[in-house]
Amino acid sequence: MQAIYFENVSLAKMKEFKLLLDCLKKIENIIEDLYEIKENFTSSRLKSLLDYQENGGLMPSNIKESLKEFEKLIVWKAINGDKNVCIPEPQPGIDQTFDDANKLVDSIKSELESYL
Image 1 (cartoon, helix red, strand yellow):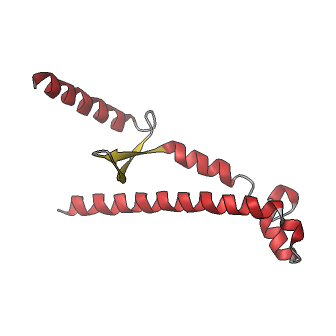
Image 2 (image 1 turned 90 degrees about the vertical axis):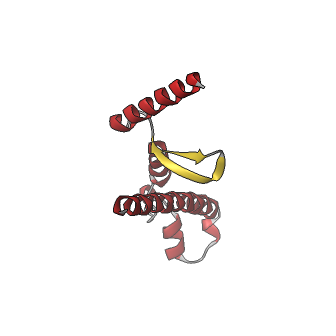
Image 3 (image 1 turned 90 degrees about the horizontal axis):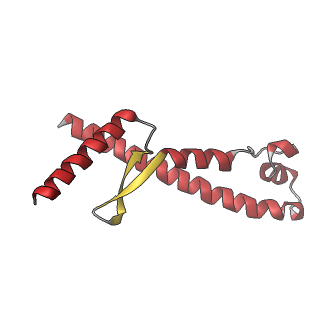
């Protein structure tokens, strides 16, 4: 019973992390739009918030790359074809134990299909 609880908590945390990544991507897009018109703003603080660090601003330069790296680590698989219900899995090659378990499950599914 306790193991199921921890699995549900972990899955909930992974879903929250995915939501956070999605929100950060949206924020990045908004900031890119504002960056293009930042010269129209009179507030020097707002200008520095919208400018990247390499230009003397406060915005980290590598946000987009970092988000892409996180997205590359996890695959979200739909359960029973329902895109609203997804579970996270590591990309193949990241976790050998998980890859081996998936291969075993696939081989068992194949055996059952051939039996049917």
